[in-house]
Image 1 (cartoon, rainbow, N blue to C red):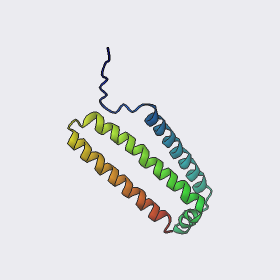
Image 2: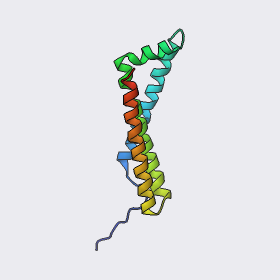
Image 3: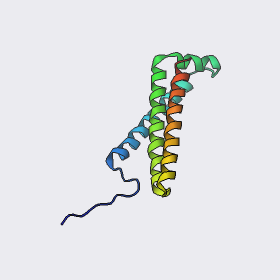
Image 4: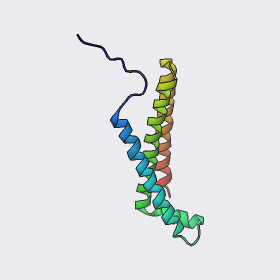
Length: 116
């Protein structure tokens, strides 16, 4: 006898659980690094900020943190939509809007970070 398993809701398992934890760790590390760097500055002016983000390592670390934030947000918002938005068409529309917004934010972040 075979049984059909019907999966409903946001039950993606270990992969998404692990992704949420890893992205949270990346964001925590970035927050600590940024805090230490800023506390080491004698003054916070536009020149200080521009100088900080002119260095390649800070741009890459910031981009990694932002991409982690976007991925973390996608998993959370997708799970909320799957749990609480029952009409499939509405849920799909909201998910597509969220993906478009997050990709636009990522492209905007790259543009900002590499235009300094």
